Image (cartoon, rainbow, N blue to C red; front, top):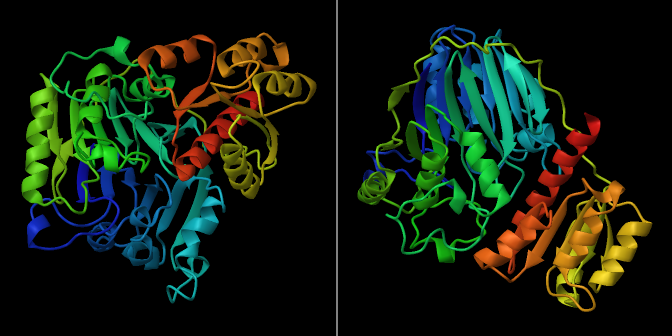
Length: 439
């Protein structure tokens, strides 16, 4: 599989002499399998030049995998030339949003007010497939999806071809919330150091990949001012790739304010931390090869299916802070969920036992019964055993995080939290829960 980078910048295009070497276009990565199957990851401004190159060969058949519908990842679609070539067939995959469906979000930028040609009038045949977490096949390729930790529902993609594996994991932030390993960039790091179940899940998604293309927008010094924005530091990206035993890490989604010299410096720092693992910083025009090899488990997965989204899910929110309750009630009700609130742990347990809920949010420090004790009691109830329980707390110590997951909580979110990121995490857990119940 040949992988070529057409756009590597994050957030907004940043053209100019100071970014000429790495490039200023927003995300777009081409991957062509040995059998000719064409995959495209994200459709930022880099998709324009890719489209011109592809259209020289006539009609195009391609699979476009959109991580999420933030503008920097879809703004190249209206200028992707194969979409205007009759006979082309484009299958566009991506996650359901919160405010609107994936087709609606994708096509919204091509409304008449913004663009002269609406999505449904493109000359090419465009098929849109909404995804959640799962696994499916495209010919001999196996595609696995997993939600990232971002400010909107975002998917990472793991592609296995023969015995080789490529992971595309952008717009993702460490789950622990605090600055990743401050002051410890060169210390030994292993899987036992991953305390948060979300980071353990992420490492498993990268496991044994030959190539990991990973968000690396920040370094540790940037992060305190950017916490909750949904992006990774190079320190986190390197640690995750090393723990996962990845062979090569590609630093991606460069900050638009970082010039070429700045990206060089991040790449040097990442290599110093990476040990024997190969690390490169993605640059427009670069091409790398994923060698396909024989595999004993080359079975073909079934095709993708639309995710079940619980738009009328019932959510229990327990917190003794009325301001937090009001914010979460307003935001989550606005997303279409039915929200029930409790002001202490005893009330939360009584409500959960008497009523059915699809998700439970618990503060740790509450009157009468703390959140950990409440979670312990709820996990003893058979019908609540698999309901996602998310802790909301200002407690950030390793001991607190370990104690929470030991009680069977599903996720651990620290205060103050970014509202957009909270909305995305809630949607991710409701989607996962729906998939489990469907199976």
